[in-house]
Length: 307
Image (cartoon, rainbow, N blue to C red; front, side):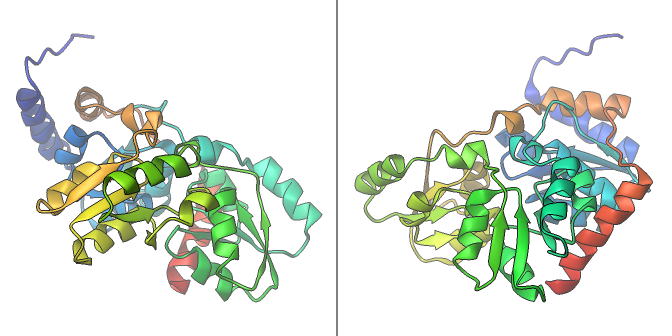
């Protein structure tokens, strides 16, 4: 295959935008993506919000700059569209910690207990679940269940956080997001000492001893709203540091401090060059078998109807 050589990012961006128009495509970037990838995206946001944006547009091609389960969710909601993930190696260790077979065994152990699957799961796991949830609505989803007991997969830290907010008995799975679990209490305390006026905003996938230090606990979309509305001028951000780029862009008069250990290598696999090649070749494609897609869609739609 003939190599395309670009001497600078500006020329590469021009080619991406040209191909995007030619392919009738939309480019979606998760909040954790590289700054230059966020800058060429039509929408930047969280995984479910991006998939909903894609479903609402007339674009024929979705270029999902995120990780594999996110591209799957876009396909679940928009099977008539071509969904591309510029690097198929961009997976999610948390999503990989639960498989459909493992979930089936757990369901057999607790017959009749509904399963709430965090959106950070594969389509096949969603298909084995009763309903999906996000970091923002997990409490509401679990409270809506008629059962006293609920299985929650796969993030144990998020599940423990939710358990403190509800009277339901939550059966947890031993899964963790490595990026959020790496955030140390000592690192937060050090930043708080260096920036005593800064508010600490933490993702609920963090460990409990980290969440105890937070002024606000919320997912990425919640963080975007919170720092915009809060009158404070300084914030310590307790999630993957890629979101700092968006926060600075949307709040130029505020200061944001990242926890340097909070980096997801999978989120950094997608580059401008890979976005260009994906648009040029219309690969790599992400699809979901129709029987799995329909079951997973049911779990996603139940969540949307509840919230």
